[in-house]
Length: 268
Image (cartoon, rainbow, N blue to C red; front, top):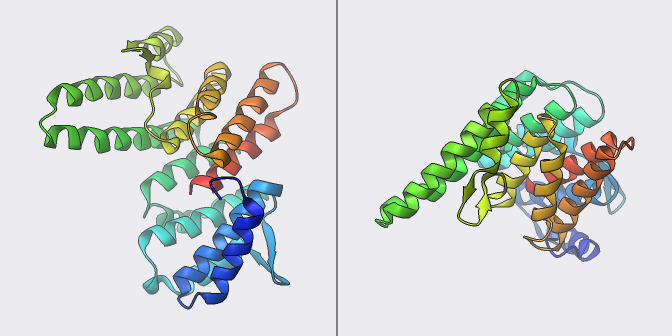
């Protein structure tokens, strides 16, 4: 799947489903097949050997078997379902969100996507996206401290502080302060382009887009389109091109949302 061999991935997930005995494994195979349907065709219904499935079906099975599943399984199945509902024009059910919170990074990205569909206040969405970023920095800083590499830990703390301020200034405060923090140089890179993985990069691109900073949303998406394996690279490239079209005045907002949703389903 990562190598963008989606037909081959589908065949093998269907085979795996035939051999799966546990609910968790069956749900995982069905989920992957559903994600491929979204990524390929932006369709939220898919067929497996003549039987139609939806993310709502998967979530229903998940809720009936919570005791057999891990918190991560539950959060992902719920997030897939909620985003499919959002895309179809439905509102988020507050009662369901508690399940997505079992996996904080998934919850943060879900808030970002929901904001793009105007279902969550942009301040709340940006706060959650910032939380994802700060968790990623903590994951890098803790090992550096444990190894006694205090210079590296201090450098990471400095970058973290600028990224945190970038989020704090992105919505309602001084545009000048936001621009200054975005362009502070750390080594050979500017703060806006320092990320550790595609989850973090996606969160920051969503933040730039919510803040109406289309230029840097596009720039970071372009940067990420050469960092990973074939499928995420293709998805980030598509996002960058859609944002560029919007910058040029084309009616591309729906294509931008589709690109973000596909990246969400790739990551969740």
